[in-house]
Image (cartoon, rainbow, N blue to C red):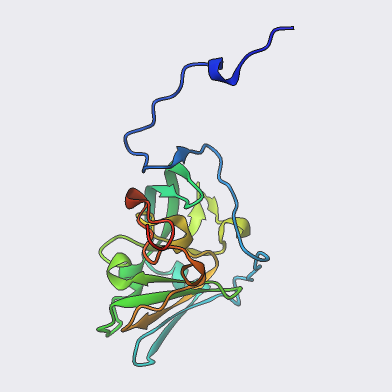
Length: 199
């Protein structure tokens, strides 16, 4: 019986130039979550932005759907080393949701159903860099991938794109979220391989 060494299985693919260091291209869409998957009925879904002064703005699902939507095609990069190119989303820009918020805060903490949190500089959520996404690949966003709505911040590792998002707390100081508190990098730039503290 013939034996084929893994080293002779074919020509090695040349990594794409747009693949961040340490990443590999993934054709599927792995599901990575900590804890059970929240199931949030749309009539109970809420998204709240709380400013550093305590002022709140809140949207129901119906109100979110009434806002201008954007179709977004972006590459996404997971800290577990997979990257997926050309993913298609639909969502509401954070620029729209933050338009009427008076704030001098420099940071935000994203909160999710289920208790997950992650921190981001506020400037990484504005100027067309972040969305509340509710559709993936032309379909409603599945709960396993963060549906009914998740944060989408594609220029950072995907743990910053909080699944099941339900709010932003604007803060004047940087407050580490769930993974950042247990050793993940505070910022998470895939092009600088900022996976863990000290990277």
